[in-house]
Amino acid sequence: MTELASKTRPPRREFRNINVVTDLTGYRLPPAGIVSILHRVSGVLMFLLMPFIIWMFDTSVSSEISYARFKAAFDSGLGFLPGWFLKLVALALIWGYLHHFCAGLRHLWMDVSHEAVTKEFGKTSAIVVLAISILLTLALGAKLFGLY
Image (cartoon, rainbow, N blue to C red; front, side):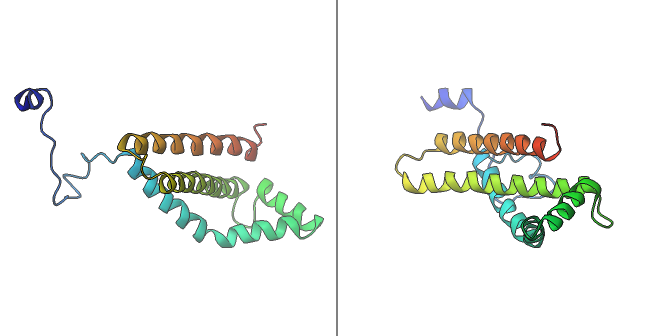
């Protein structure tokens, strides 16, 4: 029986000491690993852009004049920064928040139902998190850039 299994599938390569130049290009990270890394990246992104978030919130709710200045910054720019760049930063924040939220819900669900978590569930839920966060980001990005 083991001879049959070994003939249909070649043995998997073992990565003990991963060399960045030779081994890293052939290494396939599973979807759960990608979601885990992106969860960390989105958290760092939101933390580092916290001053921008506070500025956006403060200028948008202070008064009607500050809201008009806020809207003008996204339309025509802010000093040396063009408006499209501010929109891209806001889009990165939107993605960061949505991905962090969806991946956090995935982690909470896996913590609550830890007996039902399998390797297949991890792969499927990671793909669902990626798809949902990208679709929601595209929808809100289309609204941000004025497509609807």
